Structures are given as structure tokens and as C-alpha cells.
Length: 98
Image 1 (cartoon, rainbow, N blue to C red):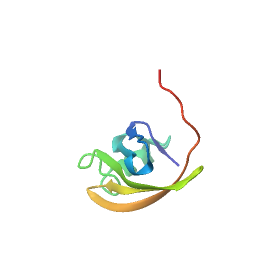
Image 2: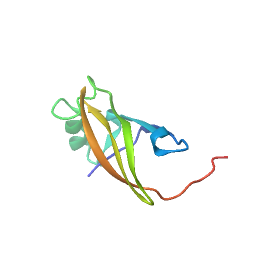
Image 3: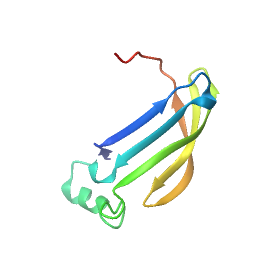
Image 4: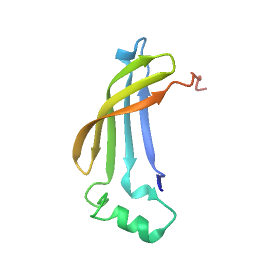
């Protein structure tokens, strides 16, 4: 198992789901599994190829659902290849950012 330690996202909430948007960027070189040999392999040309593709992105194209359960559909780009994906997401509340 591993994680990415450098990621950013911009989410905008509108008055309806149709007005909501999300764009996320992950720096592929920030992958960390706690094993330097494995990390080097995953960052190399066999997997993320961080030298050629320093980022992967997700851009939402739609949000559907109600209550707490939603489906977020969008375009995921890894190594320059973009494919549509559906993510199950849960609404857990609203907070005001000071």
C-alpha cells in the first residue's frame, strides 16, 4: 500500500449539483509506500514514469445522487491517457472556512 503526499484540489459548490465542479492534481513523484526500492520502481517507467508524466489529474464532469450518497463521474488522466471513471462519494457535511 502507498499514498501520495503532494496533491491539491479545487472544489466549487453551486446552488445545484449541476453547478458543482472539482479538479484534482497529484504529483506522481510524491508516491510513498515506506519502501524505497518499491517506490523507485513505481515511480519508474514501468508504472508512473514521473520524469515524463509528473502529474495525474481528475476533472469531474457530473455529480448525481441525493442525501449522503453520490456518484462523481469524471476524467482521470494518468501517463497522458484519459479515461472516464465513476467514484462513489459520501457527503459528510458543510464547514465554513475562516
